Length: 190
Image 1 (cartoon, rainbow, N blue to C red):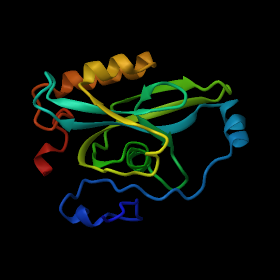
Image 2 (cartoon, helix red, strand yellow; image 1 turned 135 degrees about the vertical axis):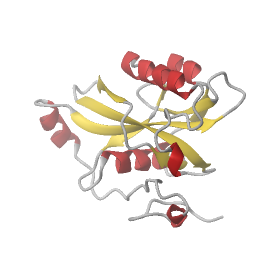
Image 3 (cartoon, rainbow, N blue to C red; image 1 turned 180 degrees about the vertical axis):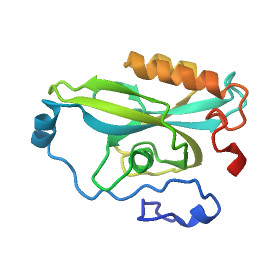
Image 4 (tube, rainbow, N blue to C red; image 1 turned 135 degrees about the horizontal axis):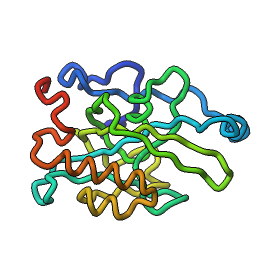
């Protein structure tokens, strides 16, 4: 079985899917002490993804991928925006590493939400929609995270952050009646 991993540039499928955002490998990680120093003045920027797949069995026509976390039971794939990476690249990387999914990210953010860890570090997460084209049987954080597919309203009920839960519900309302579930953006380009 071929091993899937993020690569610099576009993956081989990108010539067939020009809007697919390819995860970039993580160059460096930011130390916790550096994050704490930054957090004293401003929130740490992160990118997250509402990864969805089409599913005719749900009222909304889609299912959302949630991932388990050590901090909260279920959340979306999210993480730091590393130097040299765009927010969409960071979101694609997190979707691959945490949820084991690849796909097309709508470059227009759905919104953002904030949260604070027990350490006091504050985070601001910009969230993108990602149509999942491929669900991998194995991924980098599979041993630490589970993946769960739920209809959007059920997914929102599992989320601790009221801001993120509202964003998922808003996405669900946008998904109803649209062929690409992201509100029509980019649907003419496929």
